[in-house]
Length: 410
Ligand code: ADP
Image 1 (tube, helix red, strand yellow):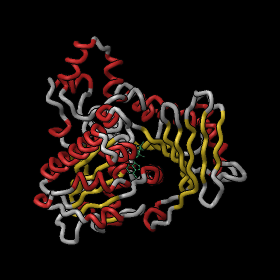
Image 2 (cartoon, helix red, strand yellow):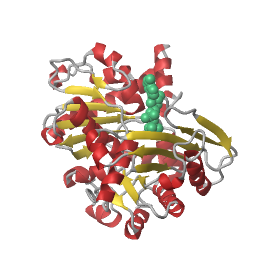
Image 3 (tube, rainbow, N blue to C red):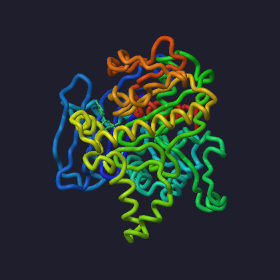
Image 4 (tube, rainbow, N blue to C red):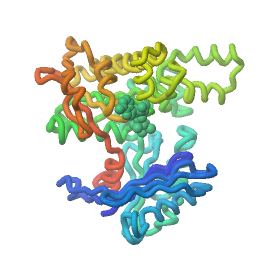
């Protein structure tokens, strides 16, 4: 079954076509048929890209004024006679949509009907920057491909297994009842992929038998404690702002700081939101960049604030690993994914060094030489094994689409 995976953001549409089926999932015979991006929607020039394996990469600058034009362009890119992946849009048999927030409604991926779409709409106020765009993408693609099933895969659903004492905030209880303010957690597809990869590739052990700490370090960063395949805690909270230090987001801070700053500088809610989400994190501390590669380069040239940003970033991850080790009653595995987690040996070293007493013995040689396919980075005698896992969120979405259609989930 050819599944189109769609990730619609405020100004971009990412997509990938994957040939998969229940049988192919079982046998590992799935095929990636091509991936693309329509970026800077609404700007004077938008970038469009597509790459099918074995074919010439396509790239152009076009005028894509809105999401409707972007969705049309996705189908044009897929069916281009020279650089595309299919001859006709009729070859697309299903669409898997990434949806950021499923609130408490969705504990798993869901075949979309009007009722499910209504619930996604009800989650707009929980994720105002994401869900409206995800919803619009679904509606537009349903219009373009009305005869195929559409499935929603939520960033939050993997974490719906958290116990209440882990997701409740210590605020007056009616704040939870009235406004659904609680920890939800995000990056669920990546944490799920890491769990799957530990089970099938790295530890080769059924997920029911192990406890893992999964660490996603990209522009956004989060960490999860996974017990027997179920998320029992995660660092992102009511929104993706909480937890680890990120590219431009602050992660954990004392909430009183916000009140103090708003009073001191007479900042509006909107200004505060921008400060916490866009000007904090690695960028805020370093004053230089939100990009880890640039910060590591600056650190190596002796830039003090870049060094501080990298150290604070790694220290926060390390602290959470300790906390989740305790939350799990002892972890068996740690997995690193995301642009930083997969590519930066230095970050992984700063996070994991000198943790022998916790049962983590890093092997620097393995850590420095692990390749694009990932692998173990701890010593043979390390009680806890750590792995680099190249994450694949699109594959998780394609698989869930097939499973939801087959009625295996949802
Ligand atoms: P997103 O969360 O937007 O998908 P990515 O997962 O691609 O982002 O992660 C982007 C981050 O990964 C950036 O901070 C980038 O600098 C970092 N990164 C990518 N390659 C490397 C590398 N070789 N060393 C250190 N950081 C890297």
